[in-house]
Amino acid sequence: MKFIDLSTTIQNSPEKEQDALKTGIRYIDHKEGAAQIQAMFGVSPELLRDGEGWAVEEFTKFGTHNSTHVDAPWHYNSTIGGEPAATIDELPLDLFFSDGFVLDITSKADGDAMTVAEVEAELARIGYEIQPKDIVLVKTGRDEFIDRPDYALRGPGVTAEATRWLYEKGVRVMGIDAWGWDAPLHMQAQKALTEKKKGIFWEAHQADLPYSQIERLVNLDSLQPHGFKVACFPLKIKRGSAAPARVVAIVG
Image (cartoon, rainbow, N blue to C red):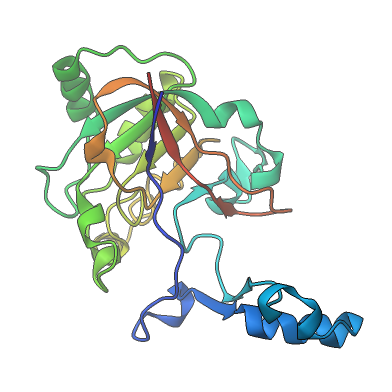
């Protein structure tokens, strides 16, 4: 079997990153770890191998959506289909290990969201028929910009209609290699404010469907269109709207 890592590295954000999106990690080295051991247990560095203690890290700032992550329905709305929306810890694990397939929309412009007709055309091109609980991965190529400050402003997105169509075919987990599943928020906001209508801003998120999204994927260009498994188990965060996940494709 071959394992392909589809997850971004969790690391300190650039100083200019917006505060709400920033990740901070404090690294405690072996010298500081030895000092901690001495303070906690009275064991001096002379009693430790090479005078070193443990190395550990702590998050000083880390949102559940600030890395490759899985969204729960609770992220979209408090109710879905008239029922309380599920949080990340309430979702069954069998959703997050299944056959995967890739839809390539790298030719589409930022904000030009994928339609139902385009989903059907891409499925015909790759010769694939969706099975219940398949995991769809939408390749936009925008992971090229994942470390750039304008990453959130890029990506075609997926329409609410296409999201609903995939759901009706049995797909319950939908991933993308862009900042978000929807078209970039600043584009949706401008359209919503101009037209003054509901259902434009965050349209695919708020499609009233109990599905999960994987956002901020990478390396989808390393995958064949189908014939692989996807493992995308989210951390079990109580009442979480999302959780970081180590997303991996398994080939063979």
